[in-house]
Image 1: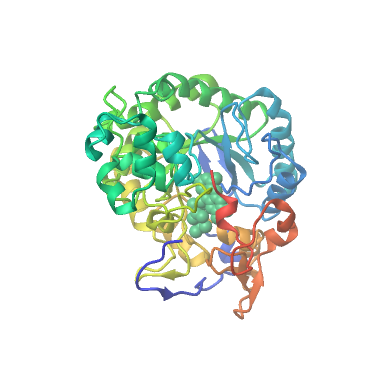
Image 2: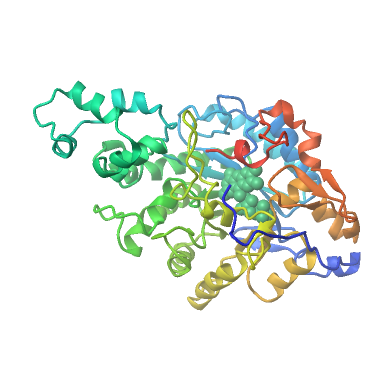
Length: 483
Ligand SMILES: Cc1cc2nc3c(=O)[nH]c(=O)nc-3n(C[C@H](O)[C@H](O)[C@H](O)COP(=O)(O)O)c2cc1C
């Protein structure tokens, strides 16, 4: 995992906890409208993938237990983890690409509504992603994967060589020499593993994404509605298909890339299809990036433009995350796949306690506030959801009071203590177990003794496909979120 050069260590600073009366009178615990429905509070658990479904993508008892546990803390909304909209095997990632998934999701919605005593709405995040291969053995790459071209032959003076001879020759070259012969994309395929991009329009399935995605999203959203989920969040963030359309790196030449308007086109078309299918009485929003946090990527000005367009189109809420891209991911080991939360942009997505002078807490506040201001300035009141390092009442309430966002979410703090929203509301903030933001499964009691995170404890992580890292600690982030 990338770390800032300064390596300053931070401990959580929750600030003063409110009394019960203060909490009840606060904005954070006041209702808010999300399109046609009302959340009972402006507290929110954003999508988190815990890899607890079956290999076929069905809801399991562990999935039910996971969300039930969050629901007992009665946040205003929980967003179900990124859930795949296609009929493709996706490992233990929840899926919604066929009607056979509806009954499990219905049980999930019922479980959350029951466990929260009707206090929590359940949304679901709908995701599409392109394929990524594991980093190949160099030998295999040169023998099988690399397509030999005239450019390779020219570079090595092997114009009249057989293909096999070119392969053998290239396979024996040192890295520095390969750097001068292979294209950047070929080098990436060799050292990171081949990864499809939305810009690979020479492949028909990529070219046709604008044709197929609106219906795929709309079909999935309709299933969510049938399953009794309270709303859908279209996943337009991080390293996945829709975020790649929004990206400044998207230079498609078919009207779906290039300038801001064309990059926003497919996300707007997807939304319009979903809305057409579900009607006005169902909340539809999206999660997108306040900043891609990569060289040459979209920045906060781009995000402000997208925010205004998405609000204008009639989205019921907009949730802001940051970073989480493949572009700056760490080189994976041979046989492993690149993971988009290992580089600097990954750090921005889930900053850990070892940080720079800005610290790990609230790095998404300023950009989110700018985006919200642009949206308000354009005349829209679309609620804006903010996440990133929030673990105290004071900061959450200040964000809401000062108009930096309308809903304040917390992911890892809710993992450390799924009851924390309820404890704060009941004036029992002193009992909150705090997240260490180490990105390992740890929390702190308020005397700063390290304890194991509650949620992971309760649902028995070892059984749940969670690996141990080299230092023997239980690793939360990487295996839990690798799509
Ligand atoms: C285990 C884990 C899984 C995550 N999975 C998702 C996901 O499926 N979709 C998503 O948009 N964000 C995902 N995130 C990012 C969180 O929603 C959140 O934006 C991020 O952790 C920063 O918030 P925090 O500082 O409150 O943890 C995940 C985070 C964690 C820790």
